Image (cartoon, rainbow, N blue to C red; front, side, top):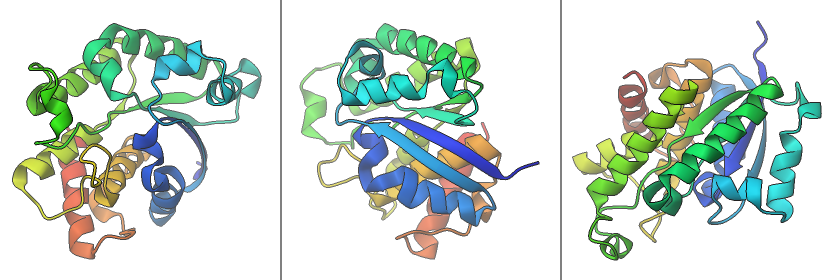
Length: 231
């Protein structure tokens, strides 16, 4: 069995922060014995439906990558949704994933959902809507991904769960960037580790790549990922 794979990431800043696909996921996969060629199509604030509806450069690039004539180009396509559509337009998320799922499978690749982390507790953005609380955002992200995953049989990289678990435990990690919305380095490391675990069935606790984290910090992240991905 070959250990060479091609992975396409489609998402927004929650994917491209810290150059997660290339600077974290790729060397992480290599440390686990997998040779991975990574590509990504990302745009700030982009929702998955917009890659299907718009005609700008990122949307054209994403659609071109998923054309049937690209069969064999990718082994996996990782899909990451934006926050507002998850919270206020859940059905548009479902429909976008259904369409993208069909395109991805038609070209012979396997889809994966990357369930991004929610905003940090105390983020002022969470107070704009009384229903938009820290807990509600977390539950909405989890339930939306669980629902469409069950419908379409798509595995989920549960970064949202791992970050929530560590955040609730009050660990000393840069889970969030200073804006309290985007991932800090540890948040991006967790996302990459969740994807790696889903794609290749790797036990995260045996991965040796620490990136910019100390060995102790990386171990905390890996243990949190193992906890949420084995459920």
